[in-house]
Image (cartoon, rainbow, N blue to C red; front, side, top):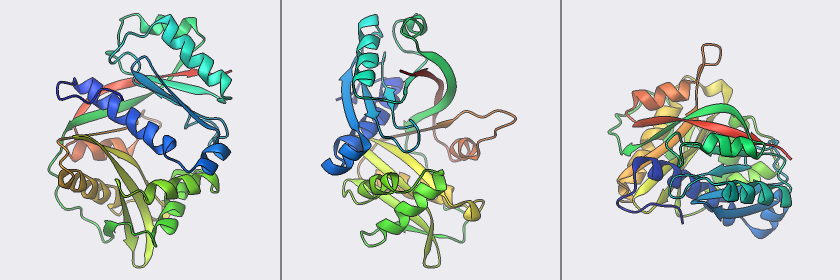
Length: 276
């Protein structure tokens, strides 16, 4: 397990909770679905490597998280990541590394093994914020088993992912009793959905997606509040999440929402890409 001890640093808690949700969502997928997605996982160097060889998104779910947080990033560790990715047919591998990772020359280590720096994400981790009720005309509530298929369709469409395997995988997570699943409804039609993963005393916001025609109506803020309150009911003390960095040409409303609602911003994390 990645580090979630009481004395974990904010970086270890932030990277560890994300690594654990990535591990859990794949490791507990139904066997047939896992085979069709080509799922494989490895724990190495204090982090996790997750391969989805048949990832319908083209490679997003092939990720390595947590390196350098509890153990140094060495040539041997990166060799293991690359070898595992190659062996299991990863179309790509995105190593997401916190700026405080050890040792200080970890970028040179990644470059020696063919990884190239790409985009960045913004990481959040801190105490559960007090979020006021959102100004929205949508109804937000937990997702029932009967409602889960329709919400899975919404999440996949909201992210612009191809249906089919991704819908099945989303449905699997929405129906897990130990994950929190919420949706925003416009009458009897779901227009947004989101998940919460809890690991010990730490919770993690897992992807929220809204249909294009329903954006700007407060769904994301309302779903964040619902999941924070769910984390509080579960006894969690900390909550984390992440989203893409923005530029003048590519603003990110999710980033502004997280800041506005009081989530604790820690750092900007680099993404390093390997291709076979």
